[in-house]
Length: 385
Image (cartoon, rainbow, N blue to C red; front, side, top):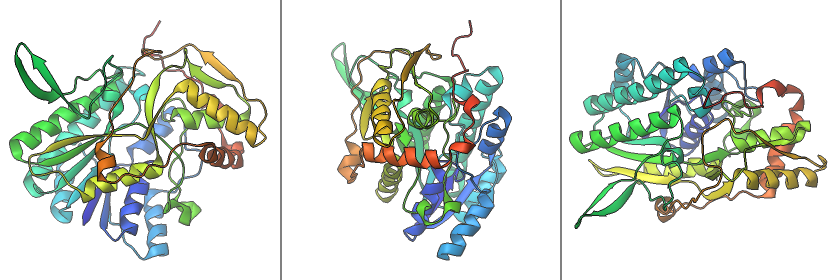
């Protein structure tokens, strides 16, 4: 198949491109390199050195003789999107090309407007480009479980049957997004669903949980192929942050009570889920939603797991510190989301274990000298006092 990866320079996009390339698909990357600019602007960087995208592609080609054409351009430039779609004509489009951080979107007006404009308008340009040049292509779009929030009912996969005043219908599951970033994902979902309904496009919305992990089969082939590993308060995920804090001897900072419960999955399972979605495409006019995670944990659960794993490899007695929660969110809540559709397609999950946490801790320990300590603590409040 011809697979176009949007945002192929990112934490998920880069290993996704390599994964499909290694399996014999014709892969191209489209990226505006914006994430690197955002990192420079706020003074953060991945823990492990990440080569320029052009150099990473050259490394992959040298190792495998498998070419990955690279288009440097912006989804906000509709002519650039039209050019890529017309010249490559993909069978599948994997869309990661968005500002990915909830805390970044809450820093202020400029960041909130940038996040929504970048994410929503970019996706709209993509939908119009698909309609014009690749109407049969299958869009696999990265959404987030954060679109749902934490309602006091079971969370279904995208849709829910409603009975009301003697009548019933199947409608989109209600959304309670927790940041301007999550709101942008909700807007995307509505625009994509509308485009499928009125233009006959086909799309799968992957409402993904929090991803952890460093390596995939492809990135392990050479250190120059490593994907980005963030641990800072803006772009880092909670497990990454805890592992870095454990290595440098800081207490694991749990926001509030720590009962916030979310879905999680291994990086290698993200690739597996995307591949299953691409190989089993939606029908013309169909908008599917898959809840993409393998396990649920509370923040305090994760802190305890990291604390135990750190002690097992000799990092000493790592403490846990409850700090004031910078976010506006329930710290104790009901959480029971469905996640059956990817399992039905054949997903075989790699569950979180002390073994995997040990591996992350050891990798972080090897790069301990490069950790930027002043980027870890939360400094972006949802509500300004």
